[in-house]
Every structure is written in C-alpha cells, then in structure tokens.
Picture 1 (cartoon, rainbow, N blue to C red):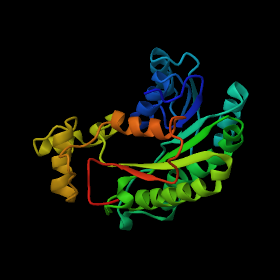
Picture 2: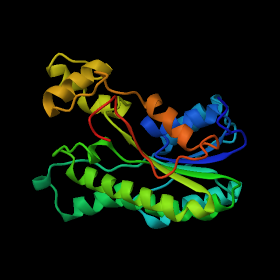
Picture 3: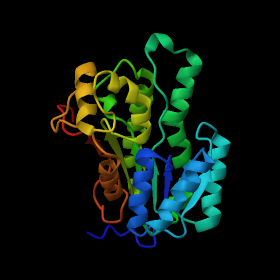
Picture 4: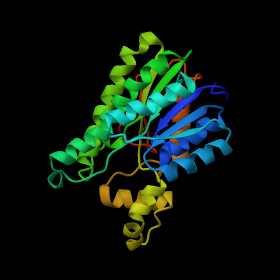
Length: 267
C-alpha cells in the first residue's frame, strides 16, 4: 500500500529513540523527508544516520528542549527555513513517573510541561507550516494508562489525558483547514529504555525484559493489567498505525483515539 509519503515532509518530536525513532524510520522508508527533534546530540546523529540508510537522504536532527517554549519555537523556525512546509507532525514526548505522595508541585509542573505543553507548543509552532502544505496531518502519542489507571504514573497519566483532550479538540478546530488530527495510545511497549530501566527487576523474577511475553507476564502479575494477545508490543507496531494516520492515504480518520495495546476491555 502506497501511503503517499513520497516527497512529503515530516517532523517527529522525540524521534531519536524508542517509538519515536521507529515512527521516523517508517516514514523515511515510505519516502518522506524527516526531521527528528530531541535533546541528546549523539542520539540525534545516530537517528539521522539510520533515517538516511532507510531512504531519507535529507533527514535532519534538531536539538530541542521540549520543556522550553523558546527552544521549540526555534526548532520549528529551523524546519521552516529548511523546507517551508510540513505535511505531518508526530509528537511522541512524555514525562517521567511517580506516585502521588512522592510528587511536589515542581514535579507536577514538569510533567505537564513535557506531557501536554510540549505538544501544545509544537503544534502551535507547526501550524503555519502545516497550513502551507497541500495536505497535513497531526498525530500525538498519549498513553493507554489514561483509560487504565496505574498509581505509579499519576502525573504522567494526567498530562497524557490532557493531551488526548487537546488532540480531540484540535480535530474539530482544524477540520476546516483539512488537517486531520488523531491520537495514538500505546500500551506496554518493549523499547530499549523500558528494557534498560526494568531488566534487573524482571530478572529477579526470572523474566527477560527484552521478551514481550515475559514483560506482559510481569505487567499482569504486578499491575493486574494483562492484554488479550498475552504479550507486550514492539515499537514498529506503534509505528505502523501512526504512519497510516499521518499519511496522505488517511483521508477520513480524524478525532480518533486509537489504542495499540494488544487488546483490552477499554475503548
């Protein structure tokens, strides 16, 4: 299936690692010119190299602090100077986690700065570029936890719930411009950072943090949130649906909140 990305321009925030990188790589393989935005220069450089190998010779990595409004504005100004338009913006940034009684006001502010306001600021900066394109899409990555609560990630989940609400609202306000806006909610996804953070914890239970079935066993045992497929997901499985929603091929899906969670009772 041709998704219509040939010659298109795409921005992926948080595109240097994990799900963001998998999305950027998918867009590159489909023929898009891709800009990835993240904070770490080394990871950005590695991502750009990967994107060029996959078919995006004009790929670029832009350093940005997604907690800082001016940094975001400058990053999109750089995209404007380079391409003058953007066909799709995919926003994948998320904050850290913590239990309610462990978090002070500064931590809550930081969670919303990354979980919600980074998207608000990115979309605001990108809108002139999206409106300059002959077709445009926005996809945000929220989280399955907005429907299936976990006390360990209370501020993360609250900020992602706000993001899902903003995304739904924008689908209405931007429909007249022909800009389709959707939200993807990943479940438990085995990324490199997930594995690194939890490998010792799972190993203590005799489980492998790189094995999707072992990961879901641990999730089910500790958080009582199994999925129908019996395994965790992979970044490329999030990337495939995100790429479709961000593509020209998607002509009629807007305002959707799409779970990518292996099956659950939540819709």
